[in-house]
Structure formats: structure tokens, C-alpha cells
Length: 188
Image 1: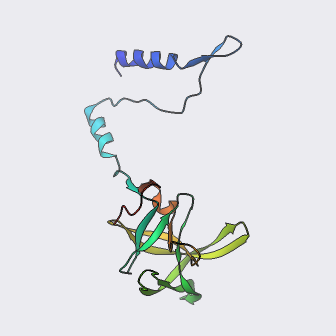
Image 2: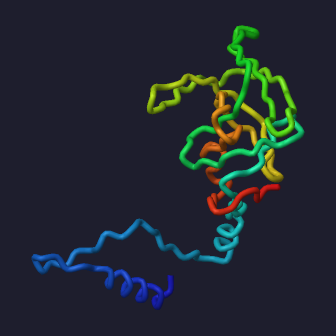
Image 3: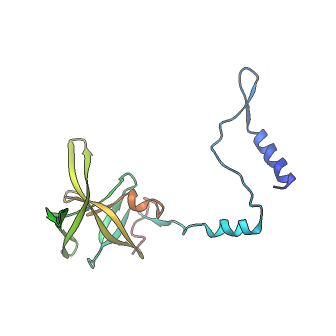
């Protein structure tokens, strides 16, 4: 690091000191940020190539395709939900080769497209509600959001009382998208 940069950094950090009532100067609490300058052009190139694809900006409601279905489900984007969920009917657990599976139907409310699924149960989840709780099966689903195909966990729910049949939670959003609730349908 050059001497000028060291002097500037020292001056900057010195200015962030605060006085306490006992007239003793103590450092102010500053969020942890590590300032580190690359020492060679090789290190600069390495840093530049480590940058991930920029996050997509999506809205509060987006079309999501539950593959192999041909039409999307309008889905609520919910950063408060840990796991995504989807509206299903006729949920029936069964055993296949000693493992727990579940069969269910998905019907798109907009055009009545229907598909029957059989999926291995990944786990069961307890959803907490004000008026009690609900146990749900969690399965892996392949979805398409925009141009990206994603395999992710979805809890199987009866979402008839909700406006949107799908709910996309943090298990899909994290590291993938930034949500602007003032917009919708950016992925069409």
C-alpha cells in the first residue's frame, strides 16, 4: 500500500474517534469493513473475475412456470417467507421403494391447465399461524423464472383463499434477485 494511501486512511480513521465524558478518546463503533488494496495486477484480475452475475430486479408478483406445465402461475414474491409454497389439490402420501413420496395435482386457476405430480418427500414442515399450525410436505420442484430454471423446495399448501397460487420465498430469492414491491411482472 502506498504511503499516501496509508496517511489518508490513518487520517480518515483518526477522524472517526469520539470523545467520552472522561475526556479519554476511544474509537467510535464502525461497521466492520476491511480495506485491502490489491498488491499486483494479477490480484486485481482475480478480484474482477470473482464477481457473480448481478442480481435481477423483480417485482412483488411474478409469473412462475412449474415445469412441465405450459402456463405460468402468478406468484407472490415474499422475502419474509423462508420456504416457497404452491397451491395443490388431492395430496396423498404413499411409499415407493421404502421411501416416503406424495402425489398431488396442480391446476392453474387462469386456464384450468392440470398436471399430476409424484414427488419424493424431502421433509415435513410445521407452518405456524396465529390460529394454530399446519403440517406440510416439502418436495423439490423444477420451476422457470424468467430465463432461469431452478430446482428448489416447495411446501405443498391449499392456497385457495389466497389470491396467488405460488409463493416464492428466500430459498429461491437469496443471491438471485432484489425485490421492488412497487413493480410487477418483470419476468414476462
